[in-house]
Structure formats: C-alpha cells, structure tokens
Length: 376
Image 1 (spheres, helix red, strand yellow):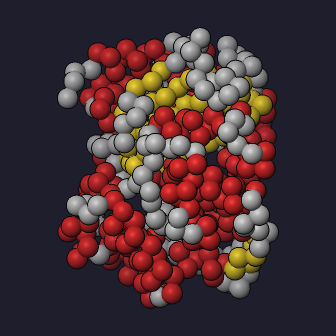
Image 2 (cartoon, one colour):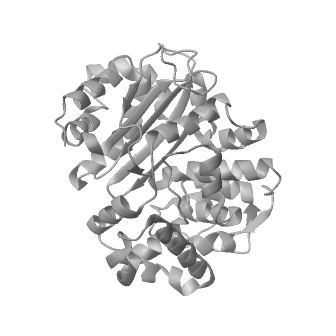
C-alpha cells in the first residue's frame, strides 16, 4: 500500500502486457467459495451514500464476516468521538510499560516491534521495549493501532475508552452488522487456554466479550502470563486458529465498513473534530508515501489478517484516470481461506482492490465469476 497506488496507475499497461493479473487469485477463490467472499465497491455522493448513477459491485454486503484487525476502525471511531467530546486527552503520556501490558509476543506478526522501530525506540529480541519507562502521547499509540496494526495499542486504547465504547459507537453510527468485541489479548488468551478452547466457540458472543475483558485485566497485571515462551507454548495450531477465528472473532459487514470509510472520505455524519482524528490516522498511506499524492488527493486504509481470514477497506479520491474527481470506497472480506491459497491472496489483495476500484472492467470480471458460481 505504501508504494502501490501510483505504481498501479502508471504501470498498468506494462503489467497487463507481461501477463500479470492481480485479480487471478481472487477470481479463483470467488469461483470456488463465493459464499465466503463479501465485497462492496462504489462511488459515493457527498452525503456518503453510494452513487446509484455509477457502476458498483456489491456481493454479500450484509454477510457476517470475521473482521480481524479491521475492527480497529471502530475503536478509532470511538476514540475520535471521545477526543472531540473532551473525554480523552490525546496528548496524555503513556509509558511503554503500560502499552506492553497488552502485548503478547508472537501473536501480532511483529507489529509492535515495527511500532517501536518507527519511533526509534530500542527493542529486545521479543519486540519489547528495552526501556519501559519511556513515554509517548496516547495519540501516538493510536497512530500505531492503525499504521502497523499493533494489537497491544488497540487494547490500550479500548481499555481507556471503557467496556461500553464498542456498544455505544455501534449504536451511534448505526453499524447494524457489527458485533461487540473486547480486547485482542483476551481473545488470544482464551484461544491459548485448552480448558476454555474446548467450548469457547459455543459460548454466546456477549459471554466471550466479557471473558476477553476479564482475561485482559489478568494479563495486564500478571507479567508471567505475557512471557514469550508461555505464549508460544499455548498457541494452537494454525488450522485450529483458523477454526477459532471463523467461530469466535468479532464479525461485521462490508456494507458497514464501506460506510464508515465513506464518512471519513466525505465527512458526512461526523463532527469536524471527529473526522480530523479519523482522517489523520487512516490517511497513513499518504503520510508514509507522499508520492501517492501524485495520483490521489485522499487515501484512507485499514485491513486485517488472521489464519483463514483477510479483510481490507480503502477510501480513495483519485486525481487522475477514469475516476478522476470521484470519491470511491472498496471493502473486501474473505473467510475460510484454504491454507494453500492464503499466501497468494494476501500478497495480491491490495493490487486486486485497487484494480476493482479504479480500472475499468475489473469489477465486472469479479461480478461475472460470482454470478456464475454454483450456489451452496
């Protein structure tokens, strides 16, 4: 994403001439598992609603899909609202030791270590800060919740917001398909607990949320539970993790997430102060690669990945090409991904989404495959 957007627009003819097809892995998955794919591609009007006068691609828009780290957009929404209302001070200092009360080494794909590296803060071999007494503003923690998808950052922010934050923002933003959720560390702790794991997927959602909060509280005050070896030994196999993700990860819909990004893109439904916070953090692709400004006036992005699941949502305002002057959203959620397809889908997802949104005829290719696929 940091380099992709202008490159795709500039090199599209060359890529096609060389036979490169970013959609190929997605089309194959769509052909085999159309019920495990949800997509929402649309141009949006100033009020944030889809523009019915322009082509769109919508498939399984209200299907309940595992979210992985895409749910951090909801946490960011709640944070933005709290900051705008004066309930949270974004400049309050957070010690690294406080941040790492929610860090489970080996469960975040190296995200926390990347956060520290971006801040030029030395880390040990497990990705933990060497000096936990150092402090950063809360808003910096929020930055890395989005930019590196730091789970510990998300849990700290969610804890500062309180247990009712998700339910409140879900209601206020009318996210009809959004399940409630607790901290990541509590969810992963339950997956590591053989006693809980046996029945966890059969628990009602609100019981799992309550359990996640309880486990997170215990983890934050018990360093031994965050010991890297303890965490490593407790992790289930990737196959078992995929089953747990499908059954117990917080679920949501591409319709809701495309709508959230449309609000950031247009400002509709958000107070100016809320939009400023959300746009600043979700706009990381423009900050990390200023060259994106050659092709776009705005880019907002957040995705997530867990075993068997890939999710992503973009909002784009192109300055060049056939969609110049439009505002576009594209949200793509995949679940139950076979392990042999996961790597290709993960590697091609950014390219595929940009093609679906910006390149004429590409959304129709996916629509044709989905419409031709056999039913369940």
